[in-house]
Length: 493
Image 1: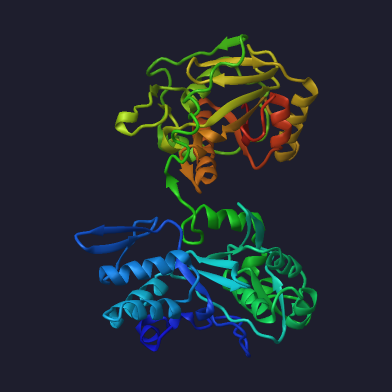
Image 2: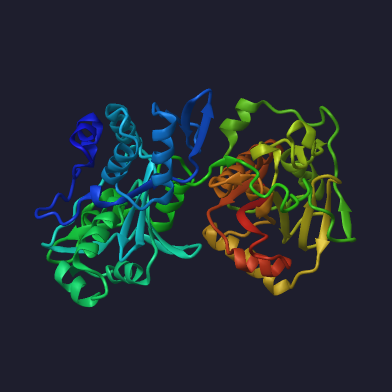
């Protein structure tokens, strides 16, 4: 970019932090620029403002003619920032150069641009910064490089997306040659080796792709043993790939995806009902406690709460089970959808907190022993406050119970309560955070279960994991529509 723009605030394009290398082979100013996804232009009374998907605004103090040329060049995405400035100044000589350079500097500083590597008249790769924390990194012809174990290469429509929770951007690879280069870097490679292995790529393009991969936190220089900095980090060594990726993608700051309650499928897919419809004609009504039947001091219960893994001599009773389920998941009120008020889906009020009053969690009970209730598999109907008996293979049920016993150091339970999620209840409304909200709902239910069990003098224990495929097969459910996300053991004390 012109010196004026560089002085106006593009110093951040300098190589940053760890891994600085000598003999750089990449200049970010050689990349073509276009606006990042989700940016809209608002024009009112001759004034123009860019607004991004998060509602951040940036004024464009340019004349209408200069603005037209400027936006046209950005839409094409075929020229660098330098070329864009030159085109505007050439086509509209009266353009205020200072204002133009100021706008370019603000767009770069605020990371409003996407950056494309053009090769042979087409885009080979596009880099998308996610936040102001993004910074370009250098690459060098010396040394070797290797992908981070946190790097993720996946399909995004017709392209391949390379991203990492270690970075603040992602790279879209548009050609098979660029994808092949990224895949080959799962092992350490030098620049010379890359040029030999990928002759279809020009050396300057390989250098640019290396720098772009480094800039999104997917690639790092390695030592003689092939180790990269994360291999010696005590903190990163203790992160699993999927945990760190999930953490970064369900929080703001390290991705550019829509986030929050945007109802992306409104008008395309009907939302699931607020309460799952009955699925069995064989039903067991449960005791519904009267007002004042059970009273306990909250603070005393909070102090009493413990995970208890040993069955009592006396088994759990069906009346106790009814009281327990009533205070954990029983429906108190149905909230119908009211599109005219902006409520697009049916919701409900229950004792336990639930994201958006959606209450996507279903309660399935594998009963081993319970006074007044035959062993078997049941689903709790929270509206009717009844148990539905389901057909299930006894060997499959025993497999679920044995899995729970392993999680409790060999102890058996009277009833295994499996929380299954109707996933699309949440994902119909929420973007990026749907599964993280679902897990928070599981945590809220677990705590409610502990308090209810403590009040009833029962033995409760939340379990750390379970087999969702086994449960879906046992209950006859589709794994991608509804299956287990949490398990809780309950016994007489």
